[in-house]
Image (cartoon, rainbow, N blue to C red; front, side):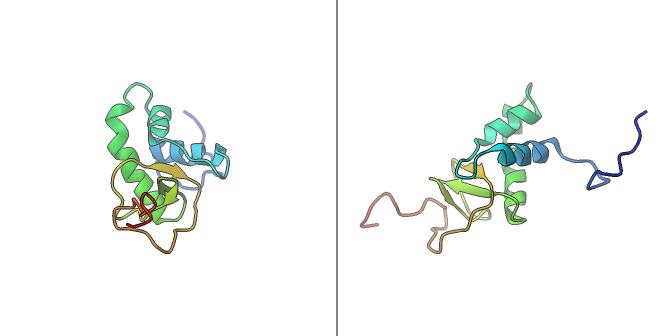
Length: 111
């Protein structure tokens, strides 16, 4: 048996996906982001593809708490409404104008 380490922040089980996301984001330069698959591969190297939904769910929860930002096309999006491909970064401010799907309108000046 191992001794209980009182320096742990929480006596409850820490999710390996949460740990992976937060560790990768902390190691990432401030202006960079991580691919969610990196967190899945770190937490579950043998079964990472089957964990992608869990990574997204954890990312949404962490973003709601302000611990990370979810990015689409390099810009923070609302974790409650975004869809599609995303990346994860250290917390960033949300832009004032954001579309509901998080894709923004930067593709066309006439959009």
